[in-house]
Amino acid sequence: MAEPILRRAIVEDVPEIRALVQRAYARWLGVTPRPPKPLAADYDRAFGAHRFDVLVHKGELVALIETVAEGRELLIVNVAVDPGRQREGLGLRLMRHAEDIARASGLQGTRLYTNVRMTANIALYERLGYVREREVDHGDGMVAVHMVRVLDA
Image (cartoon, rainbow, N blue to C red):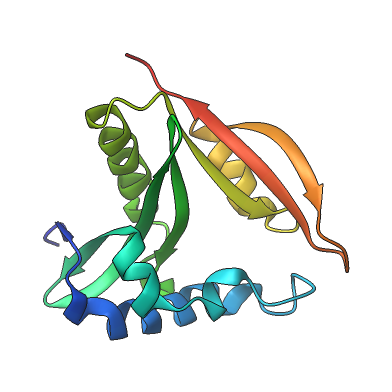
C-alpha cells in the first residue's frame, strides 16, 4: 500500500479536519469525565492561529497534527488518526514531523497535554521520549498530564 502524503493543510481541509477529529476522539467519550477538548474546538478559528499538517491517502485525510510555537517549545495541540488507520505508524510519523518543525524553528523541545485517563496515549508518548512534567487537576475528574520532550541537536 502506498504511503500517505504529508502536506500542510489548506483552509478547504477544515471540514474534513473537523470530521476526522470527531472520528478519532469518539473512542474517548465516556472514558474521560467530559468530552476531549478537540471535539469542541473551533477549527475555523484554530486554522488561522495554528499550523495543521495532514496525511492524505487517495484524496482522503487520514491523520493530522495541529501545532503552535509557544516560547521555546512547539506545542502539539492535537494529533488525530482515523480509527481505521490506527496502528500503522501515522501518529508516530506526525509526532516526528512536529519535532522536525521545532528543530527547523530553533525551538528546544515539544510539549503536549493529555488526559490522565488516556493511558494508551501516555504510554506512547513516553516511548517517544516524552517525560511527565506535572499533572494539573481541572476539577470534575479532569486531570491534564503535561508532557515535554527536549530535542536532540
